[in-house]
Length: 602
Picture 1: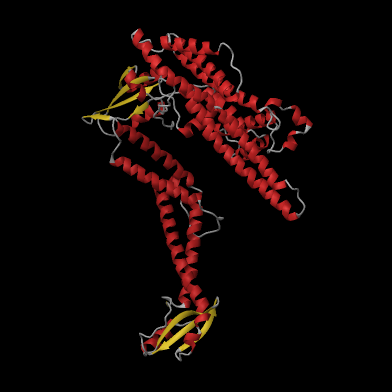
Picture 2 (picture 1 turned 180 degrees about the horizontal axis):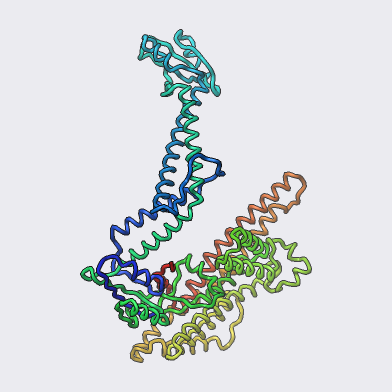
């Protein structure tokens, strides 16, 4: 990356033309000097919110267009037609919401009349004016005895088991000890007429939205344009202004693209300064990863975890993908589960028209890894019976088999994976410093890692260590002590390296042991699957009820097990790459992704 200072002169604050050229070039990662603030940004944001709301309203319109007396103009031909369409959609939606609210209230009033009957509000008001007051109540059957003795109480109906009672009294304060039922505000005839009118208005409003939905593309184009303006305004006011005549931006450009930027700058009369980032600026320099296309599959995982190597760190994405795929196969390790994951991925991919998305490529890869490890270990939905089928049994690796395999060999294999993984980290780190003596220190660390591998086998698995194991520690320790700090005085560097060496070796020991989690989690997946099988059909299926129960246990049990296995992949598969391996490769994922200011060409 090259650091770039870019200057633009313009007699006004309107810099759309120049910034559009820069955005369509799409190469400069801009580091703003300040938060972008301006009234024009707020206006664009408000308009974006309105457009998104209008598009959402049209997206949620359901129904079929019918013949309507309301004619919708062609807004694309009108001046500021996008704004006119936007306002019409929002206003129609607001009116529809208000109509729905009114219809809800009228429906409640209609239900009241349906329950209490055809009551004339005018007659009741006339009676009240003559000094006789009618009050309505709903009284449960169990309470009727206490009020039936009153001469001024009459039962006029029953609704859903509740007695409808009228209290007739010349005393306006007279009341029963129940909540009084309020009369509707309008008559039954007015309710029915208003309900019909409002329902017709709502239907027309919904039809209007359906007709405007055909012109939704106009709003989508307007949204794209407002998002474009927002990007331009954000960049413009994130730069530093000098006397409102010149603005300056600071950013970064890939080294092989600098000529494109400088040529564009000269063509458009911009000033620029290009230089290499200083070491103290490396934390601010964005990271641009250039990998083979096949390794892009790991991007969804790294993006989800927010893992971006620093500018001066090693790119670990290729190794991350290979081992993450391998770890996923071991952690889930059931060919039946892998087949289900593959089928689900294929179904979703088909539903989306087989869109070219790297997420699907990743899921297909992981599914094949799970199926492959399941076949090698003879694991099919945790059922040993399936694993004994002659054809499938021939595909097993006897020592790795989930049923009847050699647990000692499997655990040793996991430690071997760990040693290889950590060794690759040190090889990559050594390659980074291949022209310095630091590469010799990494050779020393590789020797220590393999010494730790033999030590772990001996201490955990009681496997005899080779006679040369101590020399791996001695030789590796000497190389680390002599060549880890080339920039310091010899004695000081050696003492510093020796002081850190014991703790680093202990951490390395725990890192190698950490890979046993692959065996433990993979075994737990198999045992849980087998346990659900025993719960479901262990005693046989003798009745229809037991058959239904067995199916439920199998479906729910294996679904739970698959969910837990998927969670284990995120926890353990990512951890071994992100902590153990990345730690030995000295990768802290402290970087930020290269994200240039980019606009689509008009």
